[in-house]
Length: 257
Image 1 (cartoon, rainbow, N blue to C red):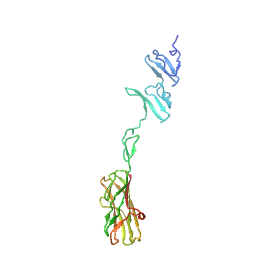
Image 2: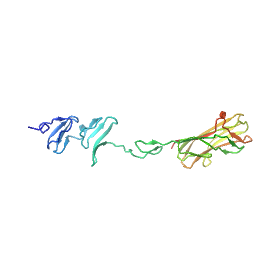
Image 3: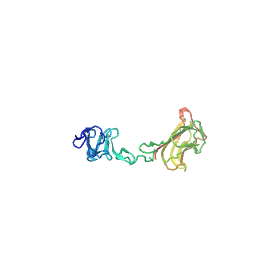
Image 4: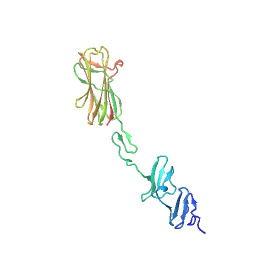
C-alpha cells in the first residue's frame, strides 16, 4: 500500500510533513508548490523564478535559497532568500547602495537617516547706549546675545563665521534725536571690505533707526563681519536703547553652503 505522500499520490499539506524516502512528494497548499524528498529534506520541484516568486505581506512558509518574495506591506520591497554560509534569511534583492554612507553638505550622520545640520543663526544687541564720536567711523560693540543657533560667536564688535556658506547679515542702529549732519552705517568683513552701506542725510529732530542687510558668502573659517556707525552732528551722539527708537542689533543667518 503506498504512503499517503508517496510516489503514486501527492497529498496536500499546509506545512511540510516528516521527510519521506528519496523520491516521495507532497503538495504544499500554502505555496501551491510541489516538493520532492531526497531522503534528507523536502526540495521544491520546478523553477525557482517566475511562478516560484511569492507576493504578500508575509513570507513563504518554507522558502528555498534563491526564492523571491515581494513584500506588499509595509514597504513594497523585493526580497531574496539568501544563504551566507552561516545562516539563511530574507534580504533585500536590491539593497540601497547609500545605506550606511556618510552624509555631506548640510547633512550629518549616515544614510538612510541623515540629520540636517544646524543652519546657524546669531542675533546680538546693545543693552546699553554706545557713544559714537563726531566725524569718526566707529565699530559698534555688542553686549547681549539674543540667541545663538550654531557655531557663530561674537567677540566685541565682530561676529565670527566659522562655517563656510552664504549668510544673510542684518544690522540696525538706533540714533538719539539730532537734526544735524549725516548718519552712515556700513557692514564690513575681516579684510575691511565693505559689504553694504546705508547713508542718511539731514535727519529730523527725532530718533532715527537705520537698517542694513546683505547676502555674504564666505569660505574662510576665521572670517567675521562687523557693523560701523558714523555721524557728523558736531558732537558725540548716542546709539540709544530707549523704547521709542528701538534698539541696535546685529545678526547673521547661514542660508546655504
